[in-house]
Image (cartoon, helix red, strand yellow):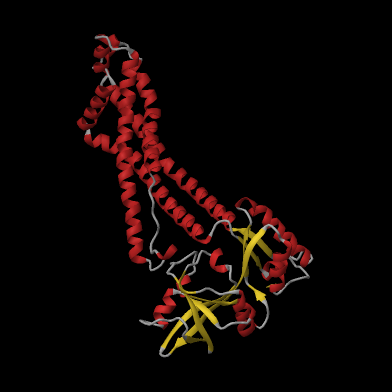
Length: 412
């Protein structure tokens, strides 16, 4: 009997016992759908995270200081934070660092122009911030070295800030107030959307020296963004920066030097562990489905004992009977896998659609839970479901193939 004929016979047996076949496939359907839902949501989150870090630039180095960690370590040399002297020292002593920008976020502040008042996120930056954070100027220009040297009041505003403070008019060169202090628009950012939890479109970027002098009162720095000379030098550049800071501050604890790539890898590891846990739970459902297939195939062998004896009597070989029952088991579980893929995909995308209606925000400005179903997941789920059928169908198939034709023909 050829393969096509065997599959046709297997499908005919499934149609002959529709309810029994459906109940037998239920375990496989539940297991495969659980796997598909899990993979779809995890891969959706992973693809969003990857796109977020690509927008930020995964080869960037982040340098920060946390006084809280230094206090937890019971250190005697606790700093109030990083200063511009640290920025200058890194620039002078770390030759593996190509460019960097200090950043000083001040949090939300009221911005007013005429009768329009909004809450903006004021951040002090340096000129290289534009390139390091992949920002694009739609109008005007970005902050320059001269702006920083002269404590300029010129600022670069996000697209939403422009629309709300200067609706329907050109904002370049015009003034507005930030917490009572005058600022002049020198540039407007192109719309970017949410990036990592921040909304650049609601940002107002000012020279970091202006923020330090007018708001902080000291040359404090919140975080430093740095880029190595070569993408392969990230780790070496991080070590060089770390050594520089340790020398300057007598090994003071609390400094953090990391790369966005390492952070991305850490998040991916968490997602992978979550996927393995969920996959294990879904695997239990597949195990139950496989046991159900074995059980129903054993019943099928008993019901078709005379048929098996007749086939052997007219010349069917042991391997023919074995192949026939293995194909039936694989077809049963494979059909369950196909249904499970459809059900799982439907549930996952339904979750995504419902979450879009219930949630007002999300990564990259998109509301809802991100979902993504890769082709490899569907192919893998189908192949694994068929494998489950073959694995659990081996014993019933061997039992059927080992029947004595004479005894089988006598079976009532």
